[in-house]
Image 1 (cartoon, rainbow, N blue to C red):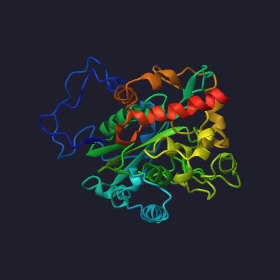
Image 2 (image 1 turned 135 degrees about the vertical axis):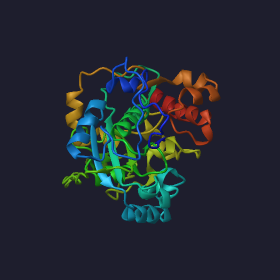
Image 3 (image 1 turned 90 degrees about the horizontal axis):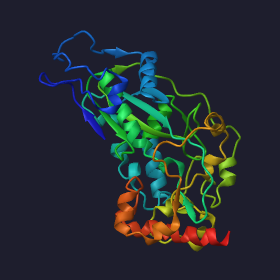
Image 4 (image 1 turned 180 degrees about the horizontal axis):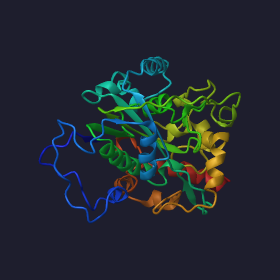
Length: 348
């Protein structure tokens, strides 16, 4: 999470040298002129139109952006409580742990007025998996969350005022903000689907005390399509739009409990997460075609050596893959997944 208050009278606003700022200012720029933020001054943002916000976001490399009012997500809070009572979240916590907080963006910042939702596409074509290797889900090949966090911080500085940035944070339900602001819509696989990049996106939120022009929700949905429901090997999506975590392969790769025997073979070479419901989604075809011949981002890691994972010190393995959620930070759980994948690969 990033938090930023209104500039103090002795604070330099220009910070040359930070990589993301090269998009906004010349590297030889000195300290900004000090201003009194309690009064109007040249360049201070009072109201940003949706068109201008889209331009700023595009300049920063954000793939989709929208704005909603900082208001309670009453229906989402009710759904979280109902599904938790049904046991559909298993022992997962995340944004479901405290809906009284995560569904109330108006409480995340004093005088919060606007909720800016942003999406960053992480799709890259997958190279052939080498023998003896396991597979990671696309969103973990590289840390797109860290990149989006920087971009939203930069956007907040451009907008002005006080703001807080939430990316992959338990304090806010990013998908609901994205749906309200037209960044995307809820798919039957429960993921947020954008028009140009499908569900191959990470989401982040900027809560601001600046009054921004709102953007309407998308007039789109999955229609009669049920490809993700039919493709799920464990029937975790039998109730469209609702995920039963206790039957989800991704959940079991992140659980401290032993994976049920009937699910082990269905994991295939996967050592963490699962992409099946995204692989079959028609909304993802467009970006997949556009990026079919693209290069992997620097440092991207779609596949891992199973032998390396199994031979590694659990603590060192955990530190190496700090971007993955692992219960109790126990690297032995990653090695458990690697053993299952190794058995599946050997039998294939």
